[in-house]
Length: 146
Image (cartoon, rainbow, N blue to C red):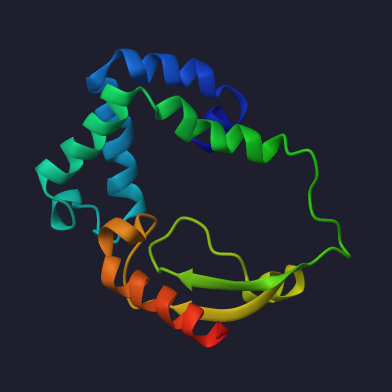
């Protein structure tokens, strides 16, 4: 997924926008693989929730813009150099079933890490899977900044 979305997002997007079944297959597979569901997507999401998500992408034809993020990341005008650092306070909420976790040491080298939370459960779709955990962590992060 990452390679095709980072190199040819429009090609993928046209096919997904043109086929609601293809779009559903593409998205539901991601929900199954990237959520904290142990391989049973319906353990975490109802059919209505999954179909609502697919429908929103399909009727608005926004899978292209969602996928384009990967292309834009790979073709950024500027990347952080070895001596560059993000100075504003940053928070990291690490959900155990997410697909990518930066090592804390790397995050601390490149960011001003004000909060680092190891969550007890959840995956890539944290706001959908564990909204209370995410909201509570965000509230704590901003409360600590006052």
